[in-house]
Image (cartoon, rainbow, N blue to C red; front, side, top):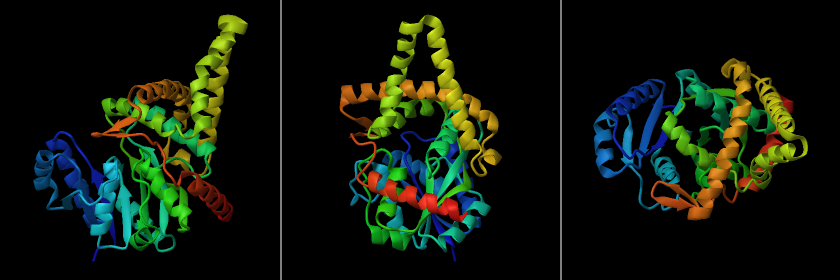
Length: 339
C-alpha cells in the first residue's frame, strides 16, 4: 500500500537516454520510499515513446489527457495526474526537484494535519548561475512572509477536487495553485524551514528562463517598476554627481541587496541549506533581473506575450493571486507566531 502519489508533469522536445535513466533511478527510489509515481509526459509522441521503456517499469507513465485544454500544458498534466492518483496525499514537483525518503515521510506527516503544504527549496549543486538564484531565494525569504516560491507543494486529492481548477492560462502556475487553495479556504502550512533540494538547470536553460521569470512579475507593478527604474536611478546619479555619484549609487544598491539576502539567510534554518556566502551574489542577481525585466518588456512589445511551448501566454499570474496572497500572508504570520 503506497503512502502517497508523487506527481511529475514533464515535457521534453528531444530525448536524452542519460536523463531518462537518471529519472528512472530516482523514480525507483521514490517507490521504495512508499510513493506511487505518476509521470504525465507532454513530450512529442516520438520522445514519449523513447521515454516509455525507461519509465514504465518504475512509474505510471502516461500522456496528457486531451480533455484538459489550458494554455499552460503543465497544468493539463497536473489535472491528468490528479485524476489518475490512487492516493489521498499528492506530492507535486517540477522536474528539477529531488525528494529524499525522509522528506517524503515528513511531507506525508504534515498532510495528516494540513490540506496543503508549501515548503522551501535549496539549490545543489551550485554553479555560478545557481548562486545568483540562491541569492534571489534569500531576498524573497527576507521580503515575503511566506518565504521563497518553491517548485513543489503537496496537497490532499479530496481538497483539490473540492476547491476545483485553478487558473491554468498563466506562466507562474506553481504559486497560482497554492493561492487558489488559500482563496478557497484550504488549510495550508507555509513550511519555511522545510527544505527540499532543487537541482539547478543547465546554463542554457537558465538563460532561457530569465525573461520568463521577469514576465511573471509584470502584474506585480511595484516590483517591475523598481527594476525598470534602476538604470535611470544610476544615470541620474551620474548626471548630478558624475562618475563618483554613479559608483556610489551602485555601491548603495549592492550593500542594500546583500543586507536583504543576509536577513533572509538569518530567518529560520536557511543558513543550514543555503551557504551564507550566497548573500554576496545578491547584487549580481539585482543586475540580472534588471536586464531580464527589459528583455521581458521586449518580448511583450514584440509578441504580445511570452512563448511557452507552442503557445503564447499573456498572463504571468492568475485570478487568485491577490485574494490568495492576502490569505497566505495572514496565515503565515499566524503560523510564525505559533512556532
